[in-house]
Image (cartoon, rainbow, N blue to C red):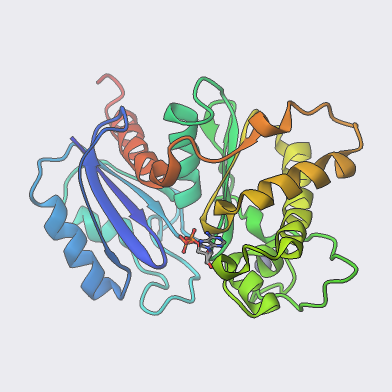
Length: 291
Ligand code: ADP
Ligand code: ZN
């Protein structure tokens, strides 16, 4: 039995299940402070005999196994979680292999194993929600360098009529600063869900996301692109991306048919938690390769 944690900035989802993506039981609760949230995680998992635990976490996180702070959340502004040693805290209660990666890398693993990119050896999973982040599978493996990718913070060309200054505390008008959910709300004065009948909102959203996708396609050449997160519940954003992307690429790269190339998660809202189950499975196989 595998344990899975989808550690989000607003909520934690914990589940137990197996490597086929089957979830036997799950629980979720708000992310408050570690002193309150972590005991709930531990209490849930104590009821089971686990073989491994996988964590897909909000970031940035330290995924460098050589680093003394491996397994911790790093520079988050979220109170109490900065430099919090998440993996270490779990190790104190559970003597099993623990897989640790970003929430979006976990989701990419879920989608390539069991979702919209099943059968492929590469994919990109992007969330457009409270923030923008992406995870990638390249040549069958999770993409990682000195750290995990931070694809939400790339620079995009501003729309000539867009005067919104941008919401990223680090870069102001990076992609996340211009196109994540809170930026939509700040620019237009209403939440995304209340802007359904304003096509200009979703056209502009696609204008920015299409630029980002062009960069990702040119650099990584993913075989499938999966777009999840709250903002992508607006089908109009997909239409806008399908409109702008070919105008940007200009036929330089021959793209697959867009409606089957750039898609919603095959695992729906479970991409993250199923991905965390697979991170557990991966950790178990890495620690005992003959199982
Ligand atoms: P998180 O990124 O915190 O995990 P979500 O992926 O649900 O959470 O993203 C939350 C953001 O998405 C909020 O800014 C919210 O306004 C926006 N959002 C949620 N649902 C919708 C929707 N149906 N249409 C447009 N925007 C939405
Ligand atoms: Zn930024």
